[in-house]
Every structure is written in C-alpha cells, then in structure tokens.
Image (cartoon, rainbow, N blue to C red):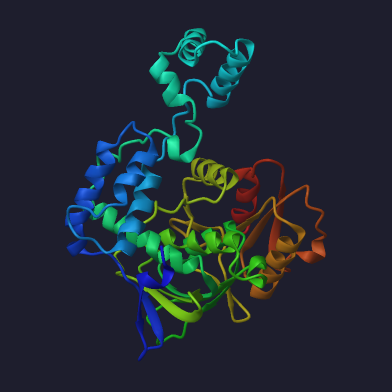
Length: 387
C-alpha cells in the first residue's frame, strides 16, 4: 500500500488529510466481505490469489488494499491447530527415513493413524504454521460494510502517525485519558492550558525517547495507539509532521473524521488504583471518588492528579496522587511537577519500597507510604482529621 496514495494534499493550507472511505465504497466492501466468507477454512494463499483479480464492483486499489489488511486482522485465527505442524513434519520425516523405499502415501497414512488424524486432515495441518497456509477464519458475523468503512479509516489515519516525527494535540474533554494512554505507551507528554479564547482546554506536545531516531517502528506504533482514545474526547485536533513518500508534510485529523472509535478508556490505570477506588467508596460513603478531576497548573504546564475526594455535604476537597512502580527518572519528574504546582489539600501515596526522602515531597502534601495496597483508613485519618 502506497502511503502517499491515501492522503489528499491541500496546498493552500499547507496540510494533507487522509483519503477516507465513504458511503460510495460500501458496495465493493460488501463484495469483499463475501469473498472472505467464502474462503473460510481454506488456506490464506487461495484467498490472496483470488483477491489479486478485480472485484465484481470497481474499487480503488489503495483503499481496497487497506480494507483487505483490516479484514485479515479481523479474520486472524486465534485457535491453535490440534497438533503442532512441527510435530507432524517431524513424524513424517522420521517415518520416511525409517523406510525410504515405502510409498509416500503409505507413510502419510501410517503417520496420520499414529497421530489420530484423517490423512486429508494431516495434509491440511502439515504447514498450517506458515501464514500463507493457515486456514482462514470467517469475518465476525456482526461485521457490516459500514463498520468496515470506519475500521479501515482508522487504519488509514493510524498510518499517518506511524510515519510521524512530531505530534501536537488540542483537546477538550477526557484529555486525561489520552495523556494516560500516551504515557503508558512510553511517550513523553508536555501538556499546557490552551488560550482562554480557544475552543480547546488542553494543548499537548508528544514525543519520546525513540523520537531521536525518527520513523522507528516502535515509536510509530506507540503514536498510532493514541488515535482510538481520541474518539472519546468532546473535541480534538491532531497535527502530525510526518514523512509521506519522499517529502515531509503536516497531516491533520480532527473531531468528526469517520474513524472507528476505540474501546472506552479504562477508569483506572492499574489494579492498585482500581482497588483503592473500590475500597475507599465502601469505607467512606460520605465522600465521592472522582476519577477525572480537572488538571492542575504547575508553572505553565498541566498535571493530572489520579483522584479527587469530595465530601457530599461539606465543602471539602482533596487531591490524591498514587506513585507506584515507576523508574527513578519518572519519579523525579512526577514529584518535581507536584512541588511546582503547590497544591493545597494534596495526598501523595507512594510505594514504601521507593527510597524517597521527605524533602523530595511537595511541602504542602501529606504522604502515605503503602505496601501492595492503600488502606482507606490512612486516607480518612488525614481528610477527616483536617476538618
């Protein structure tokens, strides 16, 4: 698939946009899905050979190739063969070596019987570990051509980010979830508040250690993983500087682009956070646990606390940050940001195995050192005792 054939240039604006699939592509996508259904259980090479021919309905090749790629991922077999192909080949080679003059069909029948397989099933499984020989799975029964349009558009848009060397985001609503995904992917995010007159609340520049090498596969995959999370924002605009063919261009992806949405973001990053939220809600029914509090300013940057704890009747509010199993560099960065934010009513829960001195913590923060889990009673003793 040629990257440059799936993007439309707009010289006046100096940007390119993905050449998305639309309603006009639905008829040939229906034919494509039917082709995948007909080849269920047959080797992939037979389907690939069939798809080299033009479909019954005309289709643009770059878009067709993108849709085929998506369908192959959806039809990838997750069921292991009943017997590993390597074991079958080893048994065949051993039997043939033991009786080199025996008829090959007799050898196959002997091995099939020893492995409790029908001879024709043995032939099917012999090279089933090769991509071209794996039996095809049918597409999900719920898959429609319209859904395939959206899934293929997501694949096309992600192709931009796989070639990106620089990404800038403007976000409104659910920004924390996007930034969390970026950080879990090992990317570095610098977030700052947008201008008060802007349509967005947060501006973010995204990079990472691999950005130094540019165009690396791992860095590109990490950036591409951001895109499904963006669909859960109220509004977003993404600008990516990327290499498309022999040239560099700025590509834009925005709210309203017809791409398949990702799964709803997880409310908690880890089992530790999930357990704390559950245990604290049971232990303190008068306090609300807010998972997505508004970001806090820290010298022109934004930080995103893990939880806000708000009393239901009294106007009391605490922020709670959990620092768990992270690298020393991340810990230094996190504690430094918290110190610069100078937040009142802040609780920092830190893994007791982290050798942090008291002077490293924000001066206004209350510190809880925990092992394996955070005891809600320790948190309540701070927030109830402050009243």
